[in-house]
Length: 168
Image (cartoon, rainbow, N blue to C red; front, side, top):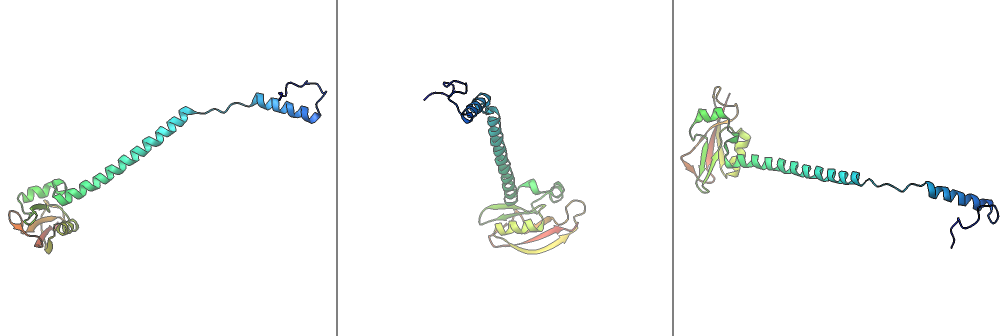
């Protein structure tokens, strides 16, 4: 097989259609640029996607960890949910319940009624009477001021716990 340049360029041997076709093919072959591949841009885009995915995963883990930490703080009686004013006002174990059967200490100081109910359910304790007392400026309205019975007394699983809330 011979290339198209092997034939003479004069009109002899070519039909006008062939000559026009050969000229068009030569122009196309000489003018078409090789496609450029932006490898640096592709690598940057891939890295950006990877970094975004890792950041999203890290954010999701932080949010899930924060929720877990909050749930742990409520269930383990962490002092993180207790306002400083309530701590100084009670100063004793009036907001702590010791569950005898499982040797668990439950702290109710500063919790609102909904959280206190959830903690009682988790501890397998029953809610007794709920009363309100004036705490003045020392407590947040609606937060637990004291529990009965409280530490150092121990209660067994299924016992009834009475709550006293701050009236404001």
